[in-house]
Image 1 (tube, one colour):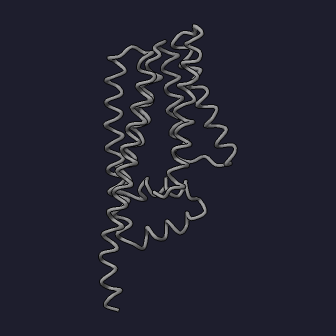
Image 2 (cartoon, rainbow, N blue to C red):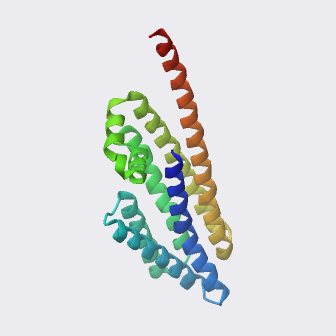
Image 3 (cartoon, rainbow, N blue to C red):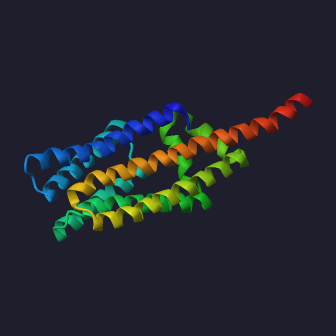
Length: 212
């Protein structure tokens, strides 16, 4: 993952994760109940999702999944009155996206390629052509998809356990921290993996250049 891709991802995550949490704690501090504060935070995140889609004039598959998960979380919360569903929805989203990573690692286009194209739209066609032509690139995307999918599924399970075990006002912050730690670990692994593959490729190419 190149520096500009990582910067864009971190900026987007900061908004997506920080906005609902900041909204929740700001309202909670002035006496708003847990359910109302979480609903407001979720509504703020949903509004940002709509704004981003309207600005780019496109709705990505990732945005569609997020919107669906937000909707399900809101529906269950309103039907049951249990605000914990608004935190468990994050696990549902992680589980859905993690499953898509795993499925696309073996069938069709890996989700890592789709993510790369979304962060580099001007090179979308080039990236797709390189993926189709280079078996090493296909292998790298499949390995990365497997790792990201497995990591997100583990995060989903851990969050559900913590949501049931911790007080709600504590879990709001812990849930965000869990996401940050998970993505930081996956991004760090991704960087090391790409660096290692680049070094190995260089070692293979250099003797050929010398021989020529």
